[in-house]
Image 1 (spheres, rainbow, N blue to C red):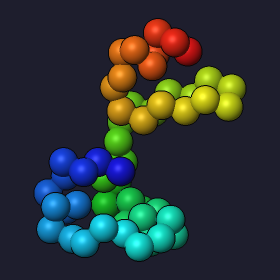
Image 2: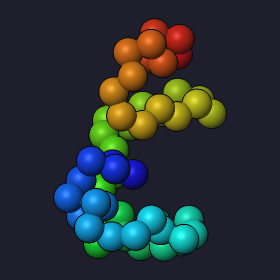
Image 3: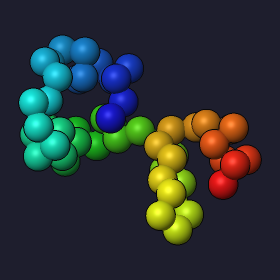
Length: 54
């Protein structure tokens, strides 16, 4: 979840995984991008070091 989004800053933290998913469904700009999936590994947001390790 993108904590820099104005929508996120105006709301309290989601209390559960379901609440976070519901919030991201209503406000897709809260989803951190890019998302890199390799096998069972997932990296959210741009992380050059994590990309190089994968």
